[in-house]
Image 1: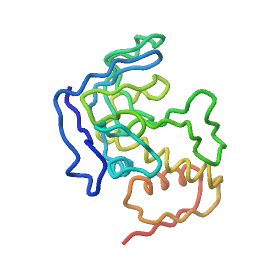
Image 2 (image 1 turned 90 degrees about the horizontal axis):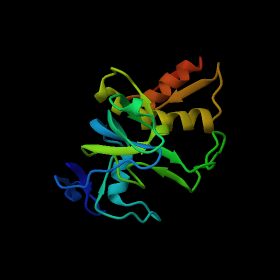
Image 3 (image 1 turned 90 degrees about the vertical axis):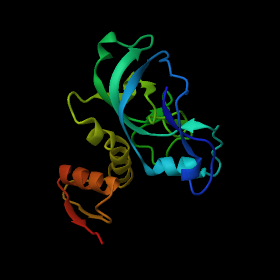
Image 4 (image 1 turned 30 degrees about the horizontal axis):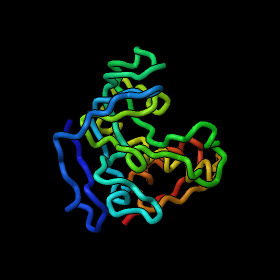
Length: 199
C-alpha cells in the first residue's frame, strides 16, 4: 500500500520523509479494526518522531501520523462487524490494560501512541483498537482528522493537570494553533472566562 514514511531520524526532517508504494498492508488483530484512511493531519508529534526523541529507540523506517479519519473496512476477532463501513476518528493514545487512570498526573510509561510507538495514519490504511475510534457519521474527514490529538492534549492540560472548574479565568496564548483552539472550546464548555493572545 501507499505510505508516508520516515526513513531515519535527523534535522531537518523533510529529507528523511518518503512516499512508498510497497508498504505492507496492516491486518487487524484481536480487538482491532482496519481503517481506510481518508485524511491524516500533521501534528508536531510527527516532527518529534522524525527528529528523534531522547531515550525513545524507535525502529525506522516507520509510518508517521497520530491523527486520522477513515472508513472501517475490516475487523479483527471480537470486534462487531457493524463497524465495517463506518467513518471513524482515531484516539491515538492506547493505554495498556489498567495502566491509565484519568487522574494520573504523569503519563504512564506503558502508554502507547499510534504514530509514535506504532505505525501511524499516514498510509492508505491503519489499524487501531476498536476502543480507540469514534463513529463520526458524515462529518468532514479533513476537519475531523485535525481534531483528536490536539483536543486530547488540551483536555489533559486543562482538566487533568490544571483541574479546570467553571467560573475560572483561562489565559490562552497563541490562539491560532490547534491545541489553543481546543483549549478555547474546552474552557468555554466549562463556563470559564477566557482571555486569548495572538501576534
